[in-house]
Image (cartoon, rainbow, N blue to C red; front, side):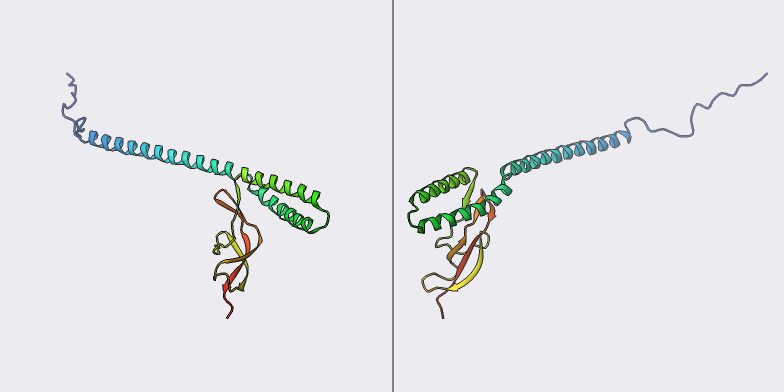
Length: 172
């Protein structure tokens, strides 16, 4: 008779019971992926807000280059207006040029351009460019004596600094 060998009922390697250590690992991994998902969602939300801000800035300041190129034209126009004021029999020319100047100023104001005020102002290197320093008995040191070129801002950004002469204070 041939004997059949029956398998041993107890295996040599014992497998862990389900839920023993495997459940703790699964829970830790689930927490890790939940944290990753929350961080990714927060990063995406920050990206979306930053992109919206950058788009808004691009729209608000899209005309910066155009306006910077128009400013020298406005400077020359004002020089012509001053010359017309001193010419004899220039009343009609003066009136026409003054009307155009007002229209141009209205246009600049409508797109958010404002002139930097320098009259009796303390010198501000963020808005002004000093082209010279001169002694002056009437103007305190560090204040604007006169402006040689107007400066402009587009909303909260500097388009062009005002060129000014600054007082050194009384002559010694």
